[in-house]
Image (cartoon, rainbow, N blue to C red; front, side, top):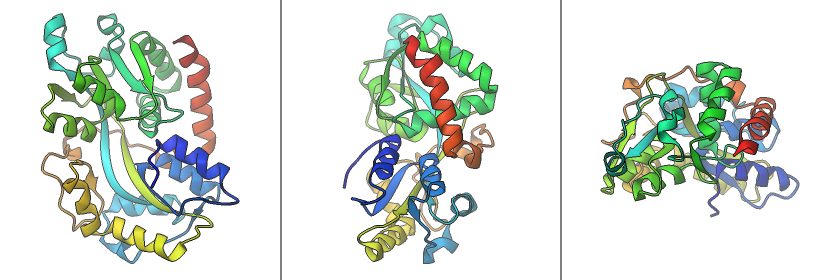
Length: 286
């Protein structure tokens, strides 16, 4: 098993397409898996467990052409360290626009969308909320407050939990895990609305251990397999309708979610376009 951020995994699978070194892609944001599916890098597979999955997971499977399936869902947000906030006498942020205020100069962390699926979801979310040009203007303003673009999507909220930054942008379930561990953080669902991820699982085209890869997917989609997430302290919403939802999982039914367009923002052309704009207009200014 190798653990990498979603963008890094996509790059590896592309590089190894003629001689795959791995059999299964498990977890992480689904957008890069949709891109891999469109590029013919994933094997079509419909698990016998498919009928037990919630509609959003089945829909993701359909969008991918049967090459990737949703295993969990999680909403994007941010968290702030309450002790640092109080010590500095700052007002708590509640919206995306708040994070661009000069009040939080040097106080925000977010991952780099080139490596992180979490950060790419944030990028695509902001474009869908504000429109593309306004979103990049916002990101330019936010850039003034960013102290670090991390490689991993969960790193910013871990840094906020440890007091290394005031605010970390991440998936809310990752923030819940930190709060459960006793860290002084408060979790925010942005007032303008927010996007969400569908974490996915897929079989790599040309997998050396195809039969076992399919068995792994079956287990990952089963209620039994998805129970291992909660047992390991994870707080995503599982995709199997028979699986138990972790009690501390953010209730996505109560969060203002955008109608996230996975087909559009999961395409290779759109990803290339958005990342190119980010590198040219935002990251170079950091």
